[in-house]
Length: 359
Ligand code: IPM
Ligand code: MN
Image 1: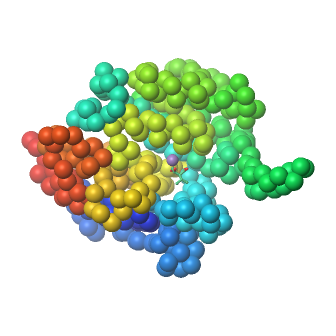
Image 2: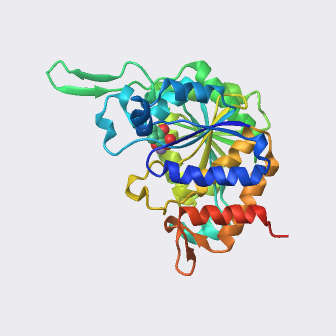
Image 3: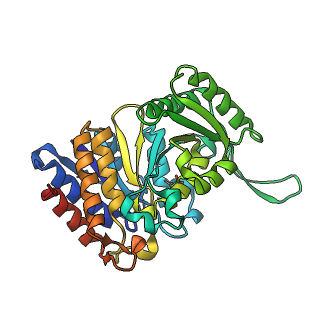
């Protein structure tokens, strides 16, 4: 398993270090693993004068999978796109055509109390947000700043999807639904946007090839409301880049903490990038208090999707479940009566649970 490890900035290195320890523990045989570290984000600027160094991109391309931490520094939206640490991830996704972003939101029963929603609303929640990741207003051209006819400054972006882009994410969504509860909700804003009208048309057309999957459509505003009111109605939610960005943060909070949520970004085959949904969290970086479970669960997704080892995915999930049952909690999921631990201690606990699984 040849894995590029791009830990990046902020809490990225701390949580990635724990994820790597868990990876080594669960794979067991160190000869089976080839880990290559490379800098990205501000770390890339510091090491090579570029947030996405050529060398890093080359290492990422040659790997079977990428383990990514987080990239960016506070205030970096002021820096031009090509040199902006936070944009390195966007460029990497685009370069590698990682168009299918899986963001599962699964409620661990031990954390029902950590959610801000009532237990009956979130208990047993298991939904998948599938976010298109390489199109939409994130990458649409033209974009930029300009001066209006009346001499005012304007910032502008373009929301655009091509048929082929929508088709390929639709197929991924329908196939994912087939492996689950066979329900797909396509989310857009077709009452206002042509881009969304096209999206909906294509989902209806592609859906005819999957008569066994129930297809529904929802506007994004209604979907955000339903995610909070009755999230268990959803199985697979498929949506575009910007709506998926917003809805996945929303879904993350249902499960108690964004510190729990892993993600996988795939290009249609087994190659993928795996990263926690959370970002650099500069306010808590370097303090050994960040929750490493999202990064650890990202390794689990990697083992399943890139290396076809669902058995190892299940081992990691079981170990995470054990440590949660044993009361280990980082501050983001802390509840009175539980056992407050730091990043490293949480990693230790997961590694120990992998080595000595309960019988
Ligand atoms: C995410 C993040 C990124 C995004 C940022 C860091 C560019 O919020 O992965 O959800 O908007 O895609
Ligand atoms: Mn986001």
